[in-house]
Amino acid sequence: MENYQDLLNKQRNYFRGGKTKDVQFRIDTLNKLKDLIHTNELAILSAVKQDLNKSELEAKRAEVGLVLAEIDFTLEHLESWAETKEVPTAASHEGAQSFIKPEPYGSVLVIAPWNYPFQLAVSPLVGAIAGGNTAVLKPSELTPNTSAILSSIFNDHFPEEYLHVIEGEVETSTALLKEDFDYIFFTGSTGVGKIVAEAAAKHLTPMTLELGGKSPTIVHEDANLDEAALRIARGKFANAGQTCVAPDYLLVHSSVKETLLDKLKASITAAYGENIVENPYFGHVVSERHFDRLVDFLNNGTIAAGGQSDRSQLIIEPTILDNISWDDPVMQDEIFGPILPVIAYDDPAAIIDEIVKRPKPLALYLFSEDENFQDEILNTISFGGGAINDTISHMTSHYLPFGGVGASGMGAYHGKASFDTFTHFKSILKRTNK
Ligand code: NAD
Image 1 (tube, rainbow, N blue to C red):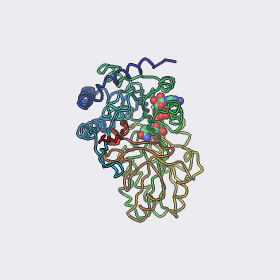
Image 2 (image 1 turned 180 degrees about the horizontal axis):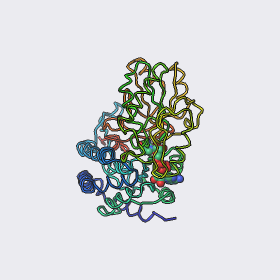
Image 3 (image 1 turned 90 degrees about the vertical axis):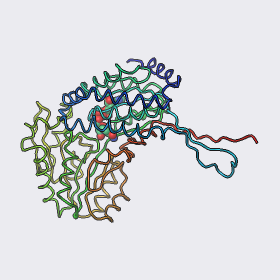
């Protein structure tokens, strides 16, 4: 197993030199990164196309566009975020001054997943750079073309003692996790999140865990069904369902189930055409292992839409599984593919009970006009974040910290939350000697 101590020592020495703490240096780095993304945009789009058959439109928006927007927002606010801020001093310390000085942690490790292989690798790095840290990035081995572009963007244009990409498989992560980094930012599955947390505990390294889980989508009897169908189809089947905040399963009031399912089918056809296996723009499942796992779910319940698949192309049609029960295999773990199980309900209290019995979801979506019901859901169920009358859109707002809770993660990022995540806030009380 490779030893990354030398690299970490180089990064520590570089950090101690103080360059990364200079706010202008951070701004220059973010501008340079932005230019590099623009220059390499075609190569990035082509890499994610090769890795996941992500269409150019989707990749422009969800991979490159979101990262550029994150950089722009950060550049707009960084100087004020990084300022030392004076705060009131307690009466017991009259005459003294109190202030909070934001300071970088030092050298951070970012481990990224494959489903948005560019965005989920670079977006945390924007926060790490803004905070004034050095960083090592380990992208996913399952999207090798994107990982290679990441390597060339960073390793050809920044010194390794500042920003460095290390490509590799699980052993590489394991070796990196043995080192005493000052912060770890991990995005991936809940199972691997536990391994990361255990490794971090050995050095008491602070960390953010951006994990997954089963995100419920509730459609109540009073929902606007046209909009619900469109927005659920869009959130669920983008990237072939391989989105951490995708609606995992649908809970629909039995009085509107048939109508909603008809509208969902129409939305799928409108978005992807009649023959998805032939559609060159529909995303692929990332690997044969993932494909086989997903195809096994197709015999749960009854197929209300889709159900076709093609292993040679790793394509599974957007599929709706009706008549599902909470005990079915498809309801046990995060699906992470284009399969939507449906459970009908009559009593909202019963679905709340079922959701709160399970691990806390990363996201929850509710379609209802009834503000009392909206409040009831928000007040009784713990989940990372979500949307009312929409899906997945909360994760693109700079003003909404994005993260999970419990089994779906700890910590948050995006916008100011990214700067805060990669920053230690040092509290100082300064007394006079008079
Ligand atoms: P994963 O946990 O398998 O892998 C993530 C990263 O961890 C990869 O770089 C991988 O090489 C590394 N890794 C894998 N096994 C490891 C081990 N035993 N020790 C150390 N490192 C290891 O996740 P994935 O399959 O790449 O991504 C899918 C999961 O990520 C889903 O659960 C999804 O919900 C979640 N996810 C969460 C978010 C979020 O922002 N919360 C975003 C995207 C994906």
